Image (tube, rainbow, N blue to C red; front, side, top):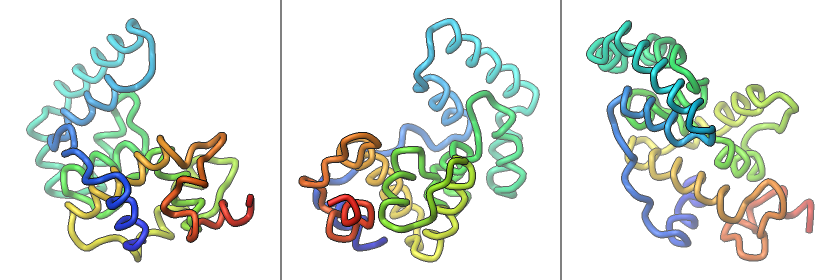
Length: 181
């Protein structure tokens, strides 16, 4: 994994800083950035605000510092926050050692042999998260960088349909690429 991340960093350059490090700000980011119409987006933001008032942003921050398990339960109360988003928020808050891969990064991990593809997204996610866990960098800055680089790679080259293996810096280590050559 470290070699793959190093190749991606060389190929793409350093990723930008995360959009935020506060858990509620990241919940809002996840909901604003999601591809829905404006009415649904406004509804989700209102619901998120109501939940934040119920929990209290200060309590959410304390929960993140106290227990990733407790924080994940609170985060999953918000609209649009499933296990992957909660894991990503906890990563960006430096509270849990995980890559928190979105669907783009997850596709890259599975194609590199981390985890098994399943018809069930949750099963695929958990399989890849468990498979990559022993290879995770020790520090949060490196894990955040890995998350961002894997995500970008999945968005730009390692696409679900028509991946660009000819331009991929990971092609030599990619099980998917080798089996589809």
